[in-house]
Length: 295
Image (cartoon, rainbow, N blue to C red; front, side):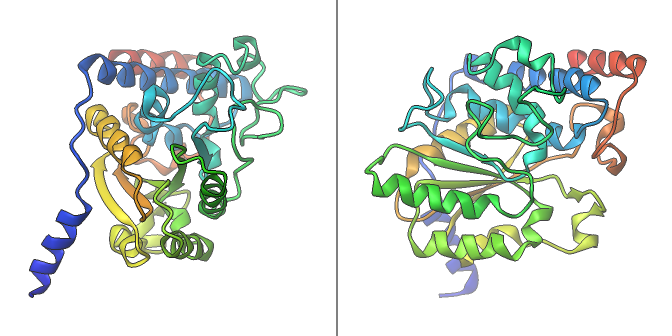
């Protein structure tokens, strides 16, 4: 069998059942992604510093996860809920509004974001914020945590539970990521799903210039994972793919490589490393909100 034939056979073996999501659910993702972007501007305006562009590259991903992809309930401590570990914990500001939407937080808590005594910080604290499953922020740790969570769910017999990890692409340079990937493949953790926010940029610039991370999919496959790639800003593709992967289970962990644009949704932030961390003065914030609403 030729290498081309082997690749074709591997792709067919990895194919997921097609899932069709109703149009109203797609619109829900669009609106929730818009909420994430707008609330990120508002909350960072309170803190006077924050990670706009890192949130914007994964806005549609987070919106889909909280639009029915993840198995959740009104109780943030429900034992048989799905778990989400923000390995790129600096995007927590985009998650807090979604937790408030679910009723896990009072909306007034958002208004005190990062202020003294408020539970909401630049990075998430699982001890203080209902709905946060791990106190992440130090890059490279998230996948290891989810391997443990996935094994624990199996030991408890929680067959329907899925463990989700949202990874930044530059943190794939951490050796711990690949130890975790190897372990997940070895233990056949089909209840574990890693989503790579492949926005091609870290704080220092283009990932392939700083230290190349490609070929991402092939690396995960070599560790025994199933892999799919999507346009991370196509709301239909995101919610349909994540839904299908979440339903798949099986005896191999799953990696979704989401091709995204850092700063997506605000023209002057797109692919601009200067907005990895920043602050918008009130007139700039107002103009940015108008652009987000117009899009």
